[in-house]
Amino acid sequence: MSHSFYKTVKRITFLTLFVLSFVASQNFAQDTKTVVVSLDEDTIGNLKNAINSDNPGLRKSGIYLAGKHAVKEVSETLVEQLDKENDPELKILILRVLFIIDENNNMDEIYRIAVSEENKRVKDMASALYSAIQINNSEKIAESSK
Image (cartoon, rainbow, N blue to C red; front, side, top):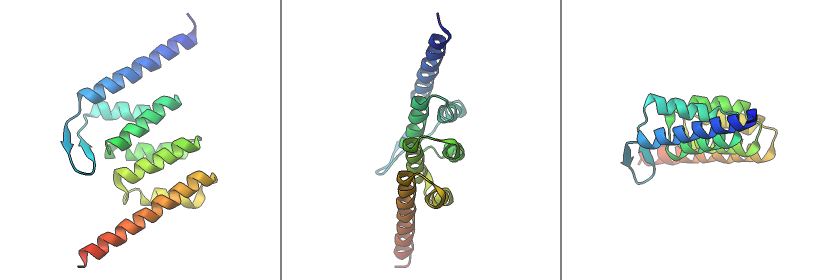
């Protein structure tokens, strides 16, 4: 059997274990807006490994799951991956997930990409998300002053 076959089997096994540990360790608390998930340290570690993976499909799945379940514990990993990521689609996904997880804490990173990114689509998405954060913050201030 070839080396690439074993590498593929290893990746599939890792992804399967990751998904199983993620599903098995979830404690859902339903909210009208998002699903809040409590994850154990092993699951968060697996999610971080997926986000940092060399496999683009696994990386995309990890980023997506972090956003779907608003896993704040991986914010720093996402920011680090944003700087390393070459795929514009994955950069956009990371930006959207950072916005979902905690828009105010990630505002500086989103702004940095909006100002410095060379890819027009990524830059436009970062600009749109940054504008949305500013609008949301303005609405919160207006709401609190009533």
